Length: 189
Image (tube, rainbow, N blue to C red; front, top):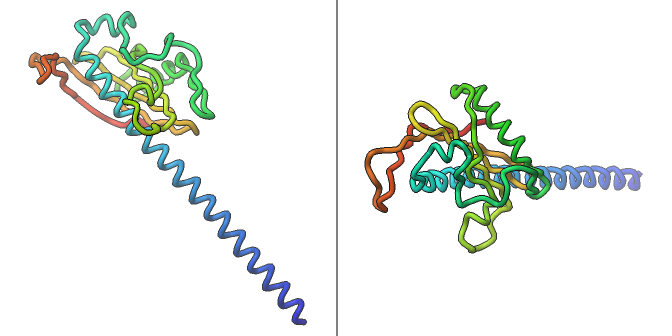
């Protein structure tokens, strides 16, 4: 009888230990996914801010809209796949996805041109170890100015998308560049 009691107690403790290990592993995965989502969100926002500053320097937005002028932040031709961790980002498919996302929203059908794209590490100064995130910014013409969509792709599938509408202002900023007025800002899901 004592042997049966010991075996039952051992089985109970083994089961409890297994539940704790699985619970800990699940919580760790959830926290990592959340962290990568937050990193992707801020990276997408940073890419859009970089593009806004870049667009303030562009003398002609028509050249940007036609694809003739791109940002200084590009990592090669604007087509083909890019590997980001376990995720493959196809720039042509990503552009089609952004146009479909805009058509489903309040923007209606817009023709987006890929403007800035590359690895997050290439956008930052060489400090620390930035997360392996790939960034893309598209531009489209709207009646008041431009619509920018910035998207960040994380290494395990995290994606965050920021959409901004902006217009050129008649004023200049502190650096003598054309001031850009942000008309709207939203995170797209």
